[in-house]
Length: 189
Length: 376
Image 1 (cartoon, one colour):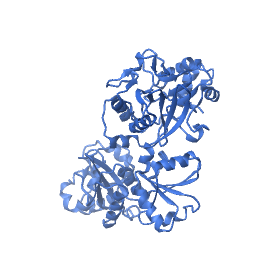
Image 2 (cartoon, chains in turn red, blue; image 1 turned 90 degrees about the vertical axis):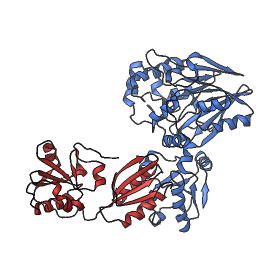
Image 3 (cartoon, rainbow over the protein chains, first blue to last red; image 1 turned 30 degrees about the horizontal axis):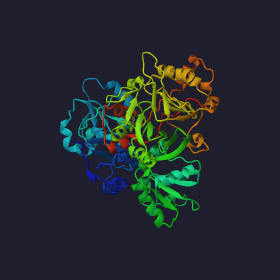
Image 4 (tube, one colour; image 1 turned 120 degrees about the vertical axis):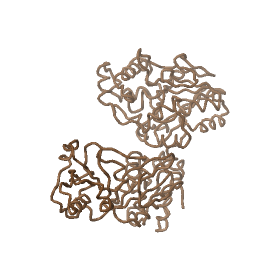
C-alpha cells in the first residue's frame, strides 16, 4: 500500500482530463505532499511524467492494478533545494556505499513513504520527516545513523532533530537518493 | 469546431499542400513519431502546458494557412482547439481521433493494370506499411494484409471478386497481420513460411514454389539457408512485379538485425539479393512491404515502388559486393532501434498471444522502424 495525501479519480476519463484533474488537485496540496492519480488511459503515464518534469513536481512512479494505472507525484517544495544546510556531520553517497554492510550502520530514509516505496537503499528504515518526532523511540542511540532523503535537505533537518534528542552518531548523506547509484530496492504492492 | 479526418489530411500530404501541424502530445511522443508531409510545418507544445490558456502559443499560430491540432486520440486536441477558436482563430481544425486514427488509415493507390491483372497498393500512411491486392478474373490475392481486414473485403466487393489467396512475406514485427482473420472471413488460403514459427493452421510457403489463380502466376522467392530461418520471402508475379516484403525497399535493403542475428540473417539477405534478385530483369517493378520516407519513395504515379534497375543503380550494396563486404556493411549499420512492442507483436502474429482490438491498437501506435535503411 502506497500512502498518498490525496487521491484523484480519473478512471474512465481520456486526455486531457486526467491531467486537468491532477493539476487542480496538486494546487490543493502542501509542498512535499504526495498525490495519487488513478487513471485508465494508458497515455496518462507518459503525460503525467512529462507534465511533472515540466512543472517541477516529482514524479515518483506508476503501479498497475489490472486496468487501473496509479500514478504518484510529490508536490514540489520551493525552498527544499535552497535551504541552508546546517548539520555539520556529512557523508557523501560514495562514502555511504562503502559502509553499507558494516555492523551497527543504520540508514534512516526520511522521505515520504511513497518515495521510499518506489526505490530505497536495501535495509533502509522508513520514517518520513513529519513522523520523526513521534517515532524516535524506534531508533537506537547505539547505532551509527545515516540519514538520507532526496537532496539532503530534509535529512539535514532530521539529523538536527536527532542530535537535539541526544543521538550522538548521526550523519547527513549528501546529496542523497536523487544521485544514488548504489543498490535499490522497491516495496510495491 | 472544425474537424479534419485522417483521409482529408492524407490527401493534403499526397498533394503536398502546406499545413501547420500543432501537435499537443508530450515531447517524447512527438519526437518519436509524427505526421510527415513535405510542406508541413510543426509546433509541439504539450496540451498540459495549455490547460490554463493558450496565450503562450497564440502568436506562434499562422493566420495564412490551416492549423491542424493533433493529439493521441482527439480529446486534447479538441480541448486546445476550442480555446484557439475562442481566441479568434478561424483556421483551426482538430484531427478526428488523433494519431490513433492516423496509425490506422489505409490509402488505396492503383499500381498496375494489364489484361491479366490489376494491382492495388494500400499505404498505411501513419506507419509506413504497405499491403497489396492482386486482382485477376473473379479472384484476388492479398499480400501482407494489415489488421483492418474490412478494407480489403470492401475493395473485393467493389471489384466483384473473391479473395482466394492471402500471403504474408514474413512474420511481421512492426504491425499485427490481418492474414489469419481475413482468411477466416473469406475462406481464402493463407500462406506463411512455416519456419517463422506460427502455431495456427496455414499453408506453409515451403510447400509452394508457385501460387496460381486465374491469369496470375506468383513465384515464391525464398532462400533457405541451412540452420536458420529466412527473415523474409519475396513474391514474383507474372515476371513483372516483385513484392519484395522486407528484403528490398525503394531506398535501401531490409534490416536483418531484429532479433540480434544480424550476421546470420545478412547471409540470407545477401543470397536473396545476389542470387534470386540478380537474375531478375531491370524493368521489373519492386513493390516493398515498407517505406521510410513517403516524399522520397512515392513515384510520380502515386504509389511506393520503382523499377529494380533504378533501385540497383542507387544502392551500392546491390552492386558487386562480396558476401564478406556485404555482411560487414550490414553489421556495421545494424540499428539498435526496434519497432515499438515488437516482441509482443511477433508473439501475436505467431498465435502465441492474443490481444483485443484496443490492445492491438496500443501495441501498434508509434513509428515503423523496419524500413530504417542500411544504405542510402
